[in-house]
Amino acid sequence: MKKKLALGLALVMSASMAFSACGQKADTAANEDATEEVVETTEEDADQVAADNCAALIDAIYVQERTDETDAQCAAAKEAWDALTDAQKELVEGENADPDYFGRDTGDASQDDPLNQDEIGENEILVVSFGTSFNTSRVQDIGGIEKAVAEANPDWSVRRAFTSQIIINHIQARDNEKIDNVEQALDRAVANGVKNLVVQPTHLMHGAEYDDLVEAVEAYADNFDSVEIAEPLLGEVGADAAETNSDKETVAKAVVDQAVSETEYDSLDAAAEEGVAFVFMGHGTSHTAKVTYSQMQTQMNDLGYDNVFIGTVEGEPEETACENVIAAVKDAGYTKVVIRPLMVVAGDHANNDMAGDEDDSWKSMFLADGSFESVECQIAGLGEIEAVQKVYVAHTADAIK
Image (cartoon, rainbow, N blue to C red; front, side, top):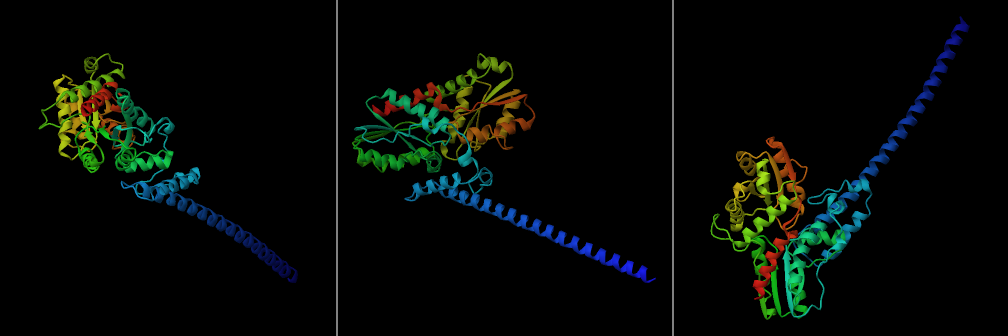
């Protein structure tokens, strides 16, 4: 009886010791897990803080006004981005900031000439564009127009200005390329002793951007012997949707010819026989100049381009909204679609609003409709088309005369 009791007590003590040892191991393992969790959480927090700091710096330069701090802010934003790890870069998100701000490959900026040199003589042609942060498009589209104007006017110095400070800041921060805004360009012209100034807008029409440009130039008029502002690409707006002009006709023919040449079809008629419609997507505007888009549709119709449709990102005029263009293409019986920008540059709107993979891009909305066998996008701006460049050259010549 005593032996059994002793044995029982020994087993209890042994089990108790074993249980205690297991408990210590369990506690140790739990502590190690907790420590690792704290470390991971801390690292995640640090990653997000670094990403948020970079996003805040990007948002600070995503503004339309240049200040005395802009240069330093651009440099700080790029420095913060370069300091991030690849994982941290993916976390960058702000009001306007995202990983594509610095991370997207838009071509080689070193191929671009900002045309901001000094000591340029007494005659200057200032080519003013809205601008684009897409480097390849800036070289081909805006640069193409600038070079055409320069070649046609060897006795004049051609310089550049952008109206979008947001784009100017983006290019400066990402690529360290400094492009003048309109005020800087005009100050540069005054400092260089320019006497005769011709301003050639690359804007599509007499819209809000053009109005703002005219106001800015007029404020500097007393600094020059002569100042002339040339016509935008599509010339005078006109009274109503039925009114067109030679500029609109030239551009209509040029963009359609270029679009067809990049397909397998020999002509627009041949494409139409195969059920192909061409949709040209402009920006759109609430300005009274929005009638220009309706006039371009009228011009296409007058040329007999029945399978050509004009649309706008902003949906102004109303008939140019994407859903209305889709309906018009369907009603006309076309089953294949080619979408191309009716914009001077193939920038953000062309790459994202037109050809992007998001649900609200034009490509996605045409596909989602389910009525079309194919939807293709041509990402190219008007500025690279030689016939379009010649329109700008002619407008500059008229202003010089």
